[in-house]
Length: 460
Ligand code: IFM
Image (cartoon, rainbow, N blue to C red; front, top):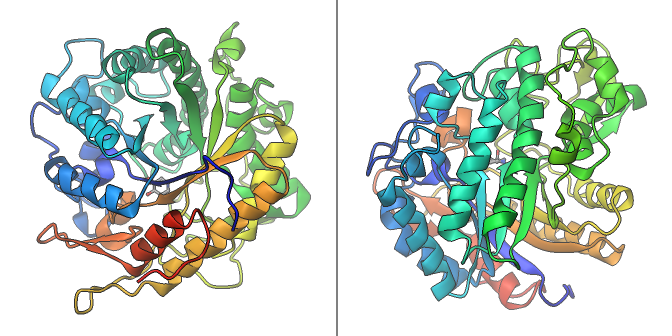
């Protein structure tokens, strides 16, 4: 397909979704431990207590990454594994050593570590102190970032502050389908601001302590919106521009402040915050799964049509008059429509609005009901999904987008949040009874694609 030299092919995971070892070696509970252990919160009562046991099987997983030929591996650090109560207290050496060994193991295999500091697992003690709606949490995050920078900053080449802060703020505090499960629209908007602030403070803190050639990023799950213009504008404000504005230096959009005025007066934003939130980044991470179709109308949507578990409270605060519409076409096991054209359209928009900002697809993938059959997983639909989205990435490159890499979500099956283990996104299958790893056909396909620098090749 002719991808540029240096284009990064990777795979991604997140700590709570794969590690397990929830109570091992001094790790303290995060909001996801509390949430998943609360009856009724997670499908089938699943928890991340054991997950894919990556904490125990990390060597085997690194070997698989090397075998796949990955250029980079995107993982997250469990905050409460390294700083159990979330504050700047003593480091949990055993927890930090786990990530140190992981990073060394990656480098030994020629794989670049891409470390995400926060993939949703706030230490429970910090939630007990008020969580993201409290400004203090952003300061605690900056301290944690600096500690991680001092520990691993000699070896990590790309740092990501936050993964999908929209989910942390709005699924966590507005619709409550994610931890900590609160339903308070005003608290969710305050959380969004404190996540923006945390991001900026962390970039500043990291730059002070890590190797000078390290790069800094954040990953957003931007919603690629289609449909009626006013509905698109409203959702774009509270799902996309609420993060893009502050982080990229144009501040909170006036229409967002107007739309949400009945909910909050935004007095949690203080003088000087704009400058902190806009700490310069080197690359913007983009997670893409599907486009979103909206219109003005009664908010009652098809169950799950917005791509998230159903709750009485909407995560799209200030958009109570927007309907999320079902979309025609093939759907994944999440009920998400398969449409790769949204990916290049979104990348082009970002490029147009932020010329000169390098982009990276930090997650893309699909859940299907995979079964091991005689030692093989024939996941043709995932292969087709990945192929179509890699082609969309190439279209964006050809149109002039400065796109630096593509990370498949996910390296392995894992704990899919409120859906537990019922949804499988991995290119490597996990047998949760035995921990056995089995390469799906998509893993063979991805290995062949990477070996051929993005050209389609025979995979088995
Ligand atoms: O599993 C999640 C991941 O943690 C964040 N991005 C979306 C994925 C699929 O839902």
